[in-house]
Image (cartoon, rainbow, N blue to C red; front, side, top):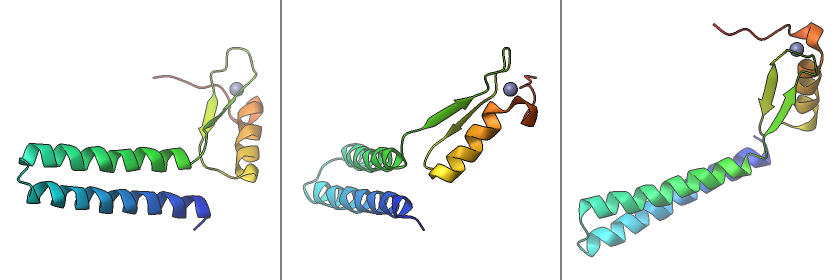
Length: 101
Ligand SMILES: [Zn+2]
């Protein structure tokens, strides 16, 4: 497991723990179930959003061939993998034209 994945998992687990703790405190203070669910969901989904950002900036590689709409978008790959995808996208003979149904 690479360090980026480990950080993502740590963020999701931490946000789950914080959300559960917050829900427990709210329940002890007799907050309604709707308020508890909303608060727990907000904290947890904030954690998911942060974990998604840790994945890295997305990169988009497009085919330079006029009229070809092939693009490849990657997120969280290392330099070698991104090079492979860039080469695939920019060499029209390797992928042909995109088709829509
Ligand atoms: Zn192409």
